[in-house]
Image (cartoon, protein in one colour):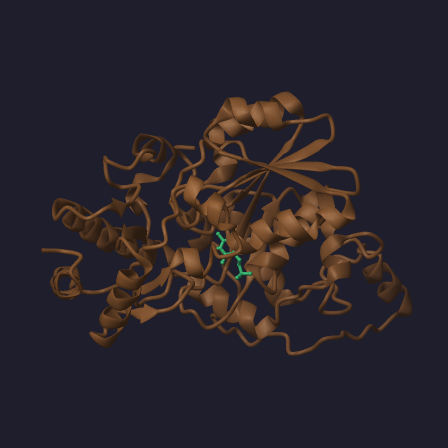
Length: 401
Ligand SMILES: *Cc1c(COP(=O)(O)O)cnc(C)c1O
């Protein structure tokens, strides 16, 4: 793990455009012509190296972006999809068939939770939800038909950190696949190095970083990627969540600055977390010693990227949270919006937005209170100025004295 440097691996990838351009050319075609009918047949079967047939199968720019993301996670291969959910659903449906069982962390992205809880059972695929740091509960939940342990490396929205080394051990013991959604911690955590089998990202967030598109990727072995793209029974080939080439081109360009952006997001979030905590606010940030997974995070992360751009603040009640968010937006401190990884700060009340699919009693039992505001801290040049303005808003709303 010490020798693994994802940013260097991305930097070293060189793709030239058709006319010697320093960015690769975008292939503006859904279908491709052949000089010989035999080559067309071979391409359909996946046997003609460097040939393209149809852009749902593959396209040059999507392969470039996928290759860069495979480098980032240290896998043999990857496949990009039109959204993060496209990557999650295709990965799970490739592995799990009728009669199979999944063990999943209970604090996961709301859409993933809804997919596991509501969408899969009619297909006879059941999921047990567990506290991902309770290894005894995980072992107890594993059944003979379990195929997968699913978790997020840093979870949404409570920023719980999963012990990937330990989970990988459990998976090896029971012959399961460990699938990790690494959306919150690109570059910071390298799940494959810690024993994961498949890593998923919503590219919509930090990796693209400009909140102008949705996108996803799953990074895995060449065999697994090929299986999902099989024309007869591949989940991604047949469900068809294909990313557009223009979008993969713009995401690839944004990926080139990810290492700089992650450092700044983390630096700013750390500053705010430390200062608001000093002020007596209930702050949840893995970089704080008060965070219950602080030491675990330290043992898993590449230190130079810091503890990430997300933090939560408890405003007490949903009314206070709403008042504060509206005021901060008016003061141009950021946007009252879901999602994360943008260059401006984004904030939303998790219980009533991205985690609203999770039933109220489960939200309470996992510590997701109604007044919890999730912040995705932006790339603010002067974070001390931001802090002072935020503090003024909090005093006005009555959260701070
Ligand atoms: C946003 C998000 C997703 C879903 O990704 P989309 O691109 O919106 O489909 C999945 N997992 C996590 C952790 C996310 O934050």
